[in-house]
Amino acid sequence: GSLEPGWADEVRALARRRDAVLLAHNYQLPEIQDVADHTGDSLALSRIAAESDASTIVFCGVHFMAETAKILSPDKTVLIPDAAAGCSLADSITVEQLRAWKAEHPGAVVVSYVNTTAAVKSETDICCTSSNAVEVVASIPADKEVLFLPDQFLGAHVRRVLERENMHVWAGECHVHAGINGATLTAKAQANPDAELFVHPECGCATSALYLAGTGAVPADRVKILSTGGMLDAARSSQAKSVLVATEVGMLHQLRRAAPEIDFRAVNDRASCRYMKMITPEKLLRALREGRDEVHVDPVLAARGRAAVQRMIEIGR
Ligand code: 13P
Ligand code: SF4
Image 1 (tube, helix red, strand yellow):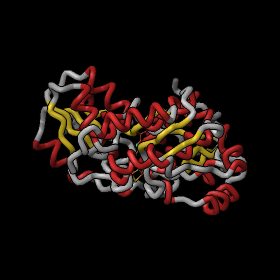
Image 2 (cartoon, rainbow, N blue to C red):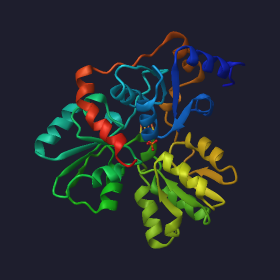
Image 3 (cartoon, rainbow, N blue to C red):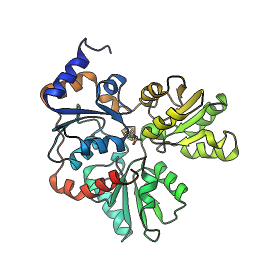
């Protein structure tokens, strides 16, 4: 919908009054990305949240991201414009399931993607995001078993890069990225033979992308498996005229801003995350006016999960 006149000015004025920093994930609506103090990927936003001097963090993203900010900064007020903005990937493992899995593999090191609940983080040794998953797993001694959760496609990517056999991967997935499949990617790549491919490792098509590169159907140097932040860096240095983007469609906004001369096209233009899009301009305004929804994390769980999240923001700097 169209924005109320003065919306952005009011958001900024209210944020100043609350001593709040506004953070937006790369999948947020364009107007939310544009009003935020910082837009970025999960890792960059976690680092900014941890380092910010502001007394309030307004997290325009999904609930686990706001929870992660609260775990890192328990003394700050963390607001999310709609606490019901969940994540199908975070929902794909419960803490009870994780405990049972750990019991089957005593001594294994648990690596959880940041897309998990605070309860799952409390049973985790190191968290990671898509930008540093490879570095995080590489930091674990080779003789240790690894339990990687919950994303099977990111897990398969890490396993492939590190050629690590003693790594078990949970069978979870994100419904948005799993829906960007190999058949669609192959058809789009064939129809756009000069395009580069930027593929998020959560995608069902990440394996197909590497297969296309392996067979020479797409030159290997045109296929890049990247986090959303990595896609922006790659866009800034790319010489390509067109790029096919396999991730949530909100990403196109920052990519087009970063490299206006490149024609960015979604591999699947229906790949929109309904949870990310629950954060609307109206709800952001309400969050700042009314101080809600405030994010609380059980202090015991937060204390147990904090070291795992701190290791995540340190690795791959
Ligand atoms: P990144 O921004 O870390 O690449 O994460 C993607 C994602 O799906 C977050 O929900
Ligand atoms: Fe979760 Fe997928 Fe939405 Fe990201 S895009 S928030 S992983 S459901």
